[in-house]
Amino acid sequence: MSGERDDTNIEARDQRLAARSREVLAESLTRLDGRTLSRLNQARHAALAKRREPRLLASWRAFAPAGALAAALVVGTVLFAARTDMQTPSVLPLAVNGELELLVDNEVLELAEAGDELEFYEWAALEAAGDGAVLGT
Amino acid sequence: MTAFATLAPVYSTPIVGRSRSANLSTADTNMRALEAFLASVERKAFRIAQLGLRNEADALDAVQDAMLKLVQSYATRPADEWRPLFYRILTNGVRDMQRRRTVRGRVLAWLPRNSAADDDGEIDPVELAESPNPQPPHQLEIDEAMGVLEQAIAALPLRQQQAFLLRNFEALDVAATAVAMGCSEGSVKTHYFRALQSLRAQLGDVW
Image 1 (tube, one colour):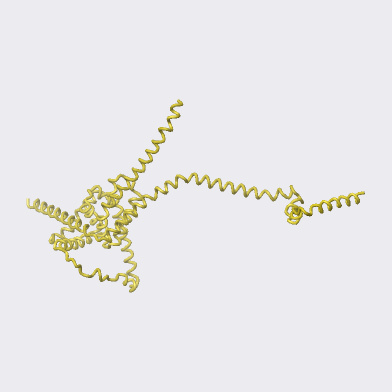
Image 2 (cartoon, rainbow over the protein chains, first blue to last red):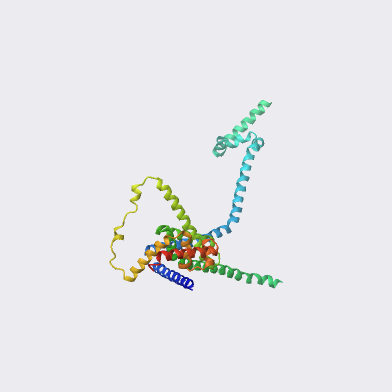
């Protein structure tokens, strides 16, 4: 009988203790200083800002396939152009032979562009042909 | 058939628009609920972390970490799961900080004391100055009780401390406390009972 009473006393004391400590802890919450409350507020906003970030990432991901396709096209074009450039030197010397020299020779181009001396070149050409004819004969 | 073909775009457009706006409003509601939840737990969480770590700056860091982790990993979970999950992250964070501190303490014990580092903890004369508004007796009583309670709680082993604060202060039920502490409900009951026994032994005469 006294054992039961002791248990009841202990239980009642535990309940009192729990209630009193809850009251004291709750009271301490109302007395947190402004700096702490401000830091908690900042922490909350920083965390929520992180929540918004994945949305931006998701919208970025929506454009990822299109971006990958565009990048692949660019790489393909560059590779194709590079391949064409590599083939050009092996073909040109055979095709144009010695005429390439004429095309890249700036001096010849300048002479051809000088229209006022065109008559002289025509005359020179005729002379050369005449000489050839003389020599041929 | 032609009629359906012509009608289809007319009806499909608003539905798409509506579902998109519905998604947006759901996300906004979720954000608001999350913000309200964090605002509702932040003070208690801070006090629980502070009682465990006995350091204000560390407690603030622990709460901030817990908030970030909850938002990043569990924001899409149902709102009623947030509280135990949040406290699970927090209690794990507090435990990790305590471990790090213990290791750091052991390492620093081997190093020579640095007088320059000691100067960092300068005493602020403003903090030491007496308040121009003396506290009323009730506040003094609460302060005194708080001091005694803090010492008694700090003397508890960490698991008993967590069980006591989560059950008694945060008012989580046994199941939620078990989730928060990452243990069985039976363990929660044992830790809580032992915490009460210890506190009764320490505070019984005072309270």
